[in-house]
Structure formats: C-alpha cells, structure tokens
Image 1 (tube, one colour):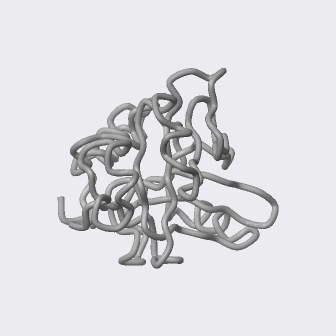
Image 2 (cartoon, helix red, strand yellow; image 1 turned 135 degrees about the vertical axis):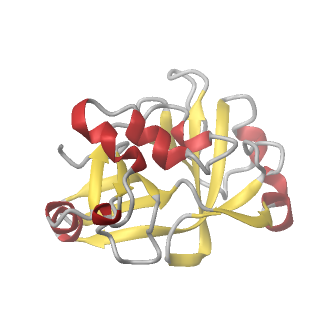
Length: 184
C-alpha cells in the first residue's frame, strides 16, 4: 500500500525497536524528504492542563499528553478533527479529510467550536528519505487505512488489535499473532 498522510503504520512483531513495539502510528506528513507521524496508543500520565492549560477544554478524553514518538519529546503536536470541512480555524493544517494539525500557539478562542476532537502529542516519529519505505519493505510495518476515530479513542489499549481486525483477508489474522508464531 502507498505511504501517504492519514495512513496508519501498525508495528509488526518483526519490529525490534522498543520505541515502536505494538504501536499504531498516524502518518501526518509524507514527502520525498521523509515522513513524520505520531504514536496513537501511548498515553502518558501527564495532564494536558498541567503543561498546556489553555487547551484543557479542547482535548478529547483522556485529557493527557500522548507520547508521540522518540523525536522532539520536549515539543508538542496537536492532531484534531474538524466539525465542518468548510470551517477550518486559524492555525489549521490539513492532513487527510477532516483530520489535521492545530498550531498550539493559536489562541484557543480562535478554534473554539470548530473541532470535534483533539489530542496533544509530546514528540513524534520521524524517518529520513526512503527510510520508512525500507522499514515497510523489510516487514517492520503494516500500512493500512485509518478511520476518523482512530486518533481519538478514549481507551487506546486495544487500538492495534482493532485496526488489524478490520483489515481485509489474511491481514486480519495478524490481530492476535504472537511475537514468535512458532510458539503458538
């Protein structure tokens, strides 16, 4: 499947990097220069209100920062879903469909009411030119389509399994695949 913004990367058991074991990554930007995404299923214990107080009323539950990846962990990215495609707020950058990014320097009153959900990620996952394609080719990632609610689930513990279960054909079988299938 073609890598594109809005797609999901689901870690395969072959992926050895502990930063990404059992993760689901939403791709936010894919170009010839590389790719950038955020891990959707790694909530932290840090409340958004404790570090970005003005955004406390805007974020979806759970109202915590998510660990978006190992790069730039001292910064934050916001992923959001618009209520109306024709009413994008100031500071909005589209990703795919109603999904996009919000500039956290934007005053919250300028986005009030225009978003149906938002999540804040500390850090991100990044790949250089052709690096992600190489990881996909070596079998480290399944590349699948996303659904609008994937980025905003309240309980992310079953996200990986649920994303895999909805895949067509034999790919769905990997939802319950053990790390070492020979032990099954």
